[in-house]
Length: 441
Image (cartoon, rainbow, N blue to C red; front, side, top):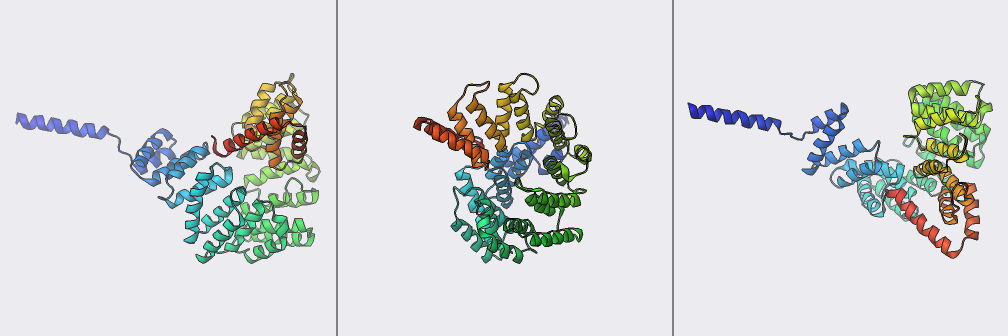
């Protein structure tokens, strides 16, 4: 009996100890993530990933994506070839943020091609968008190969792949009749065709065609055949930087039609009113920003900061503008740009060039082209910092590559004045900076 009692004690102890051992589990990981316990969720998923579960890599990527896109890309790449979701998630990330190096792009390309050949329409569309985002690596032959694979697999509207390719490589305006024909054939399959047809009408100067298209877009939205997101895409086409008041008014009407269910439409309305204040009645902008602040505080603070910064419908107030921009700077690079301008121009007193440089560089590396131009001008003028024509040429080239006309002029002037050694240094730094912005390395 004494032996049995001792054995029972050992068994209880063993069970107790085993009960304390953490066993990785997908359901526990997802429950912890839903409850905000990311540390517990991450432990379970990393343990599962180490045991070869590709789904764990996907979940780790999904957790990282909102705050660290490069880390998310790392997780998704681990699952390539093992989970079909990995290629689609990684492609969306690449198209949005351009984070892969050439090796990563080639691996992803093969995955997407194979998925398109199996009839996956989303993989095909992402593949073409990826091609268009890197004209330095991909050619028309690559697009034709992808279209052929998608057509053979029965992907609806495979021929539409040429449209995002033309748009992405800057030759859209050279193919208007072809694009119009392709989009009209694929309206029922590809809602993005409406935005493309709007651009065709604008570029060809067809006001009658545009009016007819806008009536159809509005009707389809009211009938439930177009989503608010798709209507916003058409309005965005009309509201591009070089749009005049007439197109801006059309865009405002479309944004207004869907603003009740799409916060982005409200934000874009406010931005247009900032550009064309005479298109809205007095007080409309402030009322709109107040609504936006309730739904998206960061966007609301950015817009309110711009109102104080520019003195629109309120007295100009750099102190309040700074407060608003600081509140949004953690998520919105544009807020960093405006902070750089406030500090660099001394709107709060004496210029603070060190803070200006820090905020402008953060904005530039997050995709704000105007920040690159502002950095170039600071290094050229040497106000508060030592003038550096090499850095000036570097940042002017980065801004020019993003299509800013003033930056193109500045870059050309700096290139003419630069010595061969300065041009070589600027070219080397440009390659390094572009690589860093693509990959974080």
